[in-house]
Image (cartoon, one colour):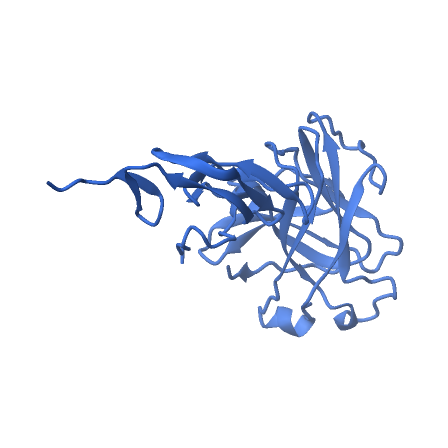
Length: 280
C-alpha cells in the first residue's frame, strides 16, 4: 500500500448603477471543512482522517485513501448532517489531489483518477455507520469528479502538490438537511477541503423600489419572482414592480417601476425620493 505525504496548499466589491442587471450574487456557507478546529468526525468506510496545513500554517483536517493495489475498491466518506436553511439548490466546492496512476510502479489496471460525489436527504440526523447503505440508491449521484492535474512520485519528492478545485451543484432539496458522501473506487487521493453553500440575490434598490434578499431557485435555470416595495414618497406606475432571481443568485428581468410622487425628486442614483425645495 502506498503512503501519501501531506503538504501545504495555496489558497471590487463594485457598485453597478441600479438599473443595470444582473448584480453580484451572495453566498451563504452551510459547511466549511477548513474552519474545523478539531477532528471533523466524518464517517469513513474506510478513508483515513489526517492533519494538514494551509498556506498560513493553520491546521486543517483532510481525508486520504490509497488502496490502488487491491481490486474492487468501494471506499466511502460521509459528512456530518448539514441543515439546508431554506436553500433549494446546493453548491459543493471540493479541493483535492490525485496520484497519477501511470506513475505508480506495477499498479493494476483498476487504478482510478476519479471519484464520485453523492448526497442523501433526511429530515433529521439519523445516519449510522451502516445506514444509509454505502451504495447508489439510496444515495443520489451528483457527478463523477475528475482531476485536471494529478501528481507523480517526482512531484511528491520535490514537495510539489497539484491541487484541483471543482464545484458541483444539485437540487431541488426539500427536506430539513442532507449528507454528502465521496466514493473512491480505486484511486490514490486526498480530499483536502469541502465547502457547501447556496446562492441568493442581494438586497437592492432599483427602479425606485426595494427588493429584499431572495434565495435562488431549485434549478440552475430557475427564475424566482420577487415583489418590490416602493421607496418612501414613491408610487407604482403601469404594472406591479417585480424582479426575478436566477439560479446563480443574480437579479434580472425587471418589470414595472416606482416613480417619485408629485413634489419629490429622485436623488442618490434613484434610491431616494426627496421633497423639492421651493425657493421664494
